[in-house]
Length: 564
Image 1 (cartoon, rainbow, N blue to C red):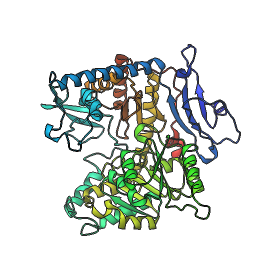
Image 2: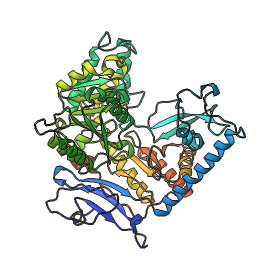
Image 3: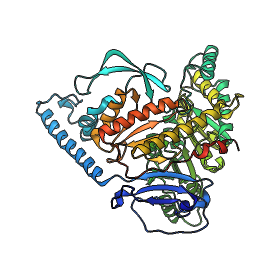
Image 4: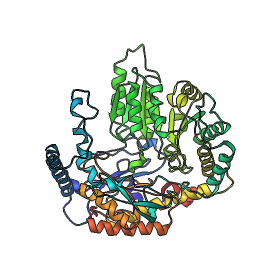
């Protein structure tokens, strides 16, 4: 993007017309969301699904995120596909009811009909009739290190994916494009593996107790001190499970007197934690930092007496980096401004962004150049970039001391395994450069280069790609339900392991394949995966894009930025 074109943006928001020579319509527009520091004001007519960042003075760097609307014909055919599948699903349920077709799904006994139902039969309709047909694309057993390449156990089904059996063969050297191994630390050789082996010899593989009893080791303390320095906060607390870090700590922090503003794309662990807390919840549209959160906060304040202003304990905002879906929280600087104005807590989930984003690998806060102290509760996991397990919460010392006494995950869960702790410590020191090498910086640079190259090539091929230019999670839009399973199977035939995602995990017309890039991927591996995607894209007619994608820059990990 040239400087002249950037000056025409509404805080960097532009709509480009189609380049195929046809008359453009709303389905022929592509939306690029960029944020630049601009003193001038500019207004444009409203457009459907338009996310506009209005306060560019809060952003310290350009920010680019692309979104191309679903072509109208594709949307119609997608709805028709789900409609046809639904009709045939009801027909098959009718046949199962009369025992014409074998019923494989679990059902309650006749004498238990008056009991409280264990499950709602209609809620499993999708699982029985749609998901089961393509279930072979998930839960594939891996029999090697899930690094840049992996080995898969081959399996077969003779009852349309209701059950599987091993064939006795192993699919070797499958290029792994589905694991969250962003920095390539999921490996069985190298400094991390060697250090974990030595710690296992010293402490053993497990502790067998909670930390508040006999399970608090010195390396637990060392890990939390390291995480505190890495995040730039006053204190931190580590947990053995990433999911429980959210679901068991949010109820300890909020209650019925609090209002939770929750991002619509928040992970299930955040949703569960918010529900368990008993607090009223208001869900807002992702990246609408200037819209719903402000409205909810203002409504909350209007309901309170003037002599009793809300404290930090009475309002909270839960948000995540949402790197899992290819984007990130571009409204974070605005949300920080809102939480300061309304004196609320900000709970930020960086499960995917920590280690993968920012010039120092410190996540979305580092990416935007924000002050970590402006985020009250910093949460993240060790399961992605660090190649380990568990999660953490960082913040003020008073907050962490409170969680040590009140968090169910801290009080009742078994302590983290010593070799897992050492894996985190070693990988984090490598990222920080405290190992005396440039390996951490090299991996961060390699991840950024791989991300830029892979996204650019897919766009040039004509695929519709969502998300931020710097996100190592690359969603390739599939749309139609029949193409979800077909894409995963065809890619595996070409020795490429991918993740495909559909409804209800995504909106019904936004099914996608999700490529996860890693610093461990070589250019040769990426070219092999791209050639396979290009071939499968032609086979399944997946190249829906109506414009040529402009070539993105290397962004925050360019050489000149890295070595300034």
